[in-house]
Every structure is written in structure tokens, then in C-alpha cells.
Image (cartoon, rainbow, N blue to C red; front, side, top):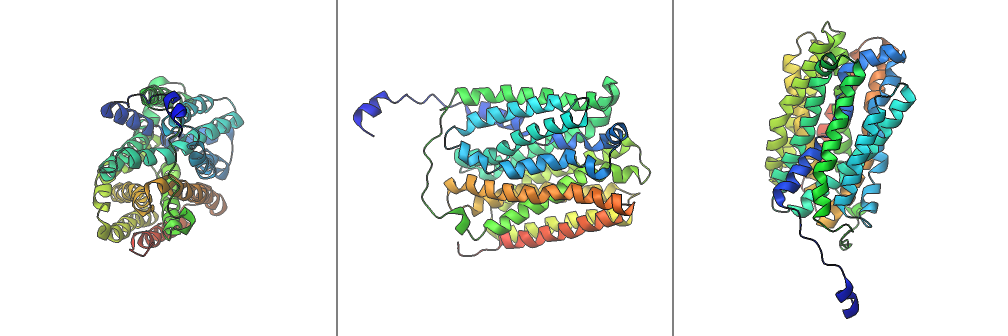
Length: 397
């Protein structure tokens, strides 16, 4: 840079205080799952109103996942022009706007709002973990745990409160879904100080080092991310219906789903800390996949006694998601490759995951029961373990 250019360059503003930035990160992360989790316990009522098949209804979960996959590569491209903080602010505002449409009077309007919500979440899915790696390089494990705790906490609140909120406000399923618009607005406002306190334009990217396409971990990490997401979002969407068809009421089914989400919370904190030790990556991948497989198998064989299966499903999902994020962080060849590997893993991964709720619902439409869908989910859970072993095994990068 020449001397005149250096003199005319604007001074960077003082960074936002760490506690304020962390608070904003948590409140934004809380908005990354209610869009899907809040609909699960209400699907029966939504289906009755619009008179559509289970496969069509699964679009409420499938469309966000498709957006997460298709739009994930857009995040690193935008970050070349704008700062991560600015993009995250706009993405969270997009979630709020889409949430307003999701209480619309017609299914096309609701699905349009679902696409907007999915687009906002897609950008934040990629950029928030990248921001953690950039700003907290010595505390990636604990900060990843805090981030995943907030993400899972949002899903827990949405699934557990879906039916009680509907009852409290008395406006049908729309009154329950509308509550999460307020959470998105709060998240947008909470993130605003992060934008004001930092540069509004992107820092120059470090383009040194090998391409992400030459990273030997790219494929297994992508498969692990996609398969664990497929398993989680499939039972997050359909578990209440499976339990209702086993004799539980809608409120009871919602509480069982909330329990499965609550169980995830301690695992989201513990697993990233354990995964910081490379020798534990493969054992963690195997054990967490076994948790999930045992939970699905229990639902298949004894759905009328859901308590142990909820505990196992929660333990599995609460472990595999933060483990996937840790794989992205520790298997990137250098810090600048983190958003690239994140975009690749989430881009292809969530496209794979989007098939889960749809196939699960379509198998139910075809067979008339939940046996074939649960067998499909069991096979996918086993594949989570296989891809986790490949992601965790040491090799020469």
C-alpha cells in the first residue's frame, strides 16, 4: 500500500467487548432451529387444515435444509466483500422477515417464508463457527460448546413450548409459530453492537495453503455432517407423529420431543472439549452413533415406552452435531480454510439431510405405518458412525 493510501485509509473501530459479542452470538444461535423444531408437535393440526400428504408436509422441514445446502457456498463468497458481522446481521433479519410469512393464510405463503428463514440460517450456519475459529483460536472447544448449546437450546424451547404456547394464546398453531418471530427480532438487535464495533468490510482473506478440494478429510467430514443432520432433523420433524400414533396426545408427544432435546444440552458442552483431543475423535464418533442407533431401534421395537429412547436419541444428536463442527474446525488445513470446509460440508451435507424428512414421510405414505421409515433412519444412523470413523482417523493431509 502506498503512503497516500495508508494515510487515507479509515481507522478500524474498537471491537465490541467480548461479553457483548458472546451474548449476541448466543442470541443469534438460538434462532437457528426453532423454524423446524417449533412445527414438529403442530404438524397434525397443520395437515388437517391444508389436507396434504405427509410427504408434502415434510417440505416445512425439507425446504430449510435444502436452503442450508444450496446457499451455504454463498457465505464465503459474501465474506470476501462484507464482514462476517454484517452478513450475520442481515441473515438474522432475514430469519425474522421469513418468520412473519410462516404464519400466513395459505401454504404457498408459509413455504415462501420457510425459504427466507432457511436462507438466513444457511448463512449463519457457516459464518458463526468460522467467527469462533477466527476470534477464539485458543478456546475453540468451549466456544463451540457454547454455540451448540444455544442452537440446541433453541430447538428445545421451540419443541417443548409449541403446544403450550398454542394453548396459552388460543390462536391455533399460528399463534405458537408467531412467537419465534420475536426471538429473531431480539437476535437481530443483540447482534447490532457487533457490527457497530467492527469493520463493515471484510478483511483480506488468506488464500495461502492447499485448496479445500485437496483436503483428504473433505469427503468424510461432509458425509458426517450430512448424515447426522439427516438423522436429527428427521426425528425432530416426525417424532411427535410417531408417538401420537402410538397412543400419546399432542402435548405429551411435544414434551417427549422436548426431553430428547433437553438431553442434548450437556453433551453439546462436553463433546467439543473432549474432541479437542485427537485420539478421542474416533471413539466419540462410534459411541455417539451407537447412542442414536439404539434410540431409533427402541422406537421401532417398543414405541409405547419412549423414555429410554428419548434419552438415547438426545445423547446421540447432542454429541454428533458439535462433533461435526469440531471436525470442520480441526480438519481444516489452516484458519482461512475453515469457512471453505464449512461451506462444503454444510452445502453438500444439508442437501443430503434434506432427503431425510421427505423420505421418512413418503415411506409412511407408502406403507401406512412407521416400521419402514424407522428402518431407513436406523441405517442412516449406522452410516453416521462409519463416516465419523473416517473423519476422526489420523492421516497425512
